Image 1 (cartoon, rainbow over the protein chains, first blue to last red):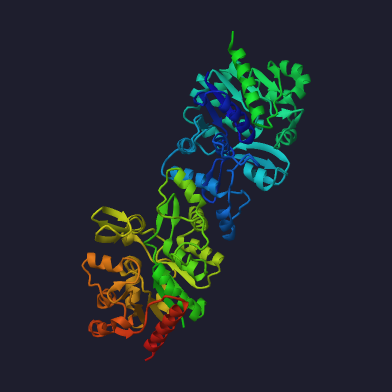
Image 2: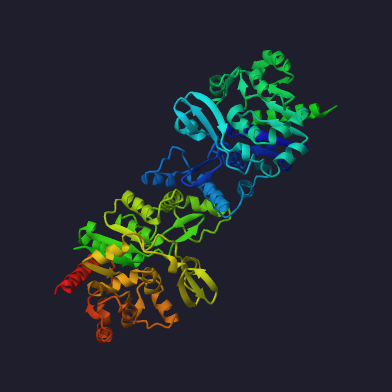
Length: 313
Length: 313
């Protein structure tokens, strides 16, 4: 059974790891958000694909969910001494990834090809596709002005009040090679419990992807990132509220209902089931919080079971 | 007294350090070879300016004469795991320099501006100018084919037999801002005991520099890099021999005599004095081997004394 997953970083990687360990990884294709991508010190950084690959390769820093474990920051010390802004916290091992990717792209490789090279070197056997090979940075309009998502997220710690989101240049971007095909050919497609606005939103904004998903609506299952109306981690709830969206499982279902027939919500949101189903989205209630590896595998099995039953006539 | 120095890497840095500690550094301008420059992993590496700056900043690795002291190689381990060629031995602290320089140049800075930023951050108070802001890599024709100097030097350990040297693109290169002015305005100019073919040669090959030096011939003193007909370190002797040059102090004097009125040779070459002077180059005999800091300062004082006496009527 071929599975496609749309995923952002830390939250998406949890479900991706559960799937990676539960199913045959060669049947797993992860379509990663690259709206988080940023050029720092001339290096092309792709945080979400890296988080996904580091996680599946068991290299991720377990304390943070991003970066590599047993990391050092020798280069960053040097960059700081040269007066460079080092709020982005680039570790030495992580920098090797960014240098390799940037060098490949300077030599003419696409982002897809660079990611595939990193994936192979890390020994990850699932497919990891960027949403697009075009640089489409997520830009936020805030009460402190317009800023790159990473600036808002890392440097400003999500403190500015959000007024709007756009994905710069997205109208001219195309899905990366294989993305539309993976959506068309998957037996089931999962929307990971990632931030709907800045992790799943950029993927949906690439021309052609949302349309492709709409054609597979019955085979698509989203895992709701809100639990009891709150983000487990990260600013989904704050961002949704500031942009006037409903901060609840039904609120997320509204954002996805045009392409998603089923949503998995946490036990604590069981009372929201009618409000979701009235939108035309079937609600499946089960524990969704992934504290440890067993939780990730349990949720992976549950969503695979939902997909199986959904694909039955 | 304003002093200009033409210098390569390790040998040049020894004399430069002696001068830096002996005279007022603000009167010292070092014109550095950049024929050694190479792009590795997409990063612009300028070995000779870096060696000079690390040396003057007391950051250089004393074991090697290049790279930084107390260096680590965490990024290089990562690059190797990505299948990248890591024969160039880039340390983590050193990489911060290369990342900073490359990022500045990507943002539109010249090599001169990038070097000046690094110089300031390292607290070096002498002026360090690249010979040119244009990338003019030293390419060698050898019995193993054409290769970049660093390939010959580091990867192939100077083993291939040399057939020719050229500086790619040099005909279209210009001296970096300030180089010709520094030559014109210096009270004295030193040619450091660097490899005549691949450290001083590239500087002389930049259109306009050799001509500017010819106009200052009486104020120019070279320190012979050969002692007793041999290189102290590095392949000067082997390279000179393979290209059919005379491997001796008079042989070096022949290469420089059009722009250099005086050459300082080591005590062990005192018998070569007549053979040098018959070429129209005054020979000054003194100890030139720089084993320790005291040697460097002693030679610096000696060459400054020679320059003083040379500039007297």
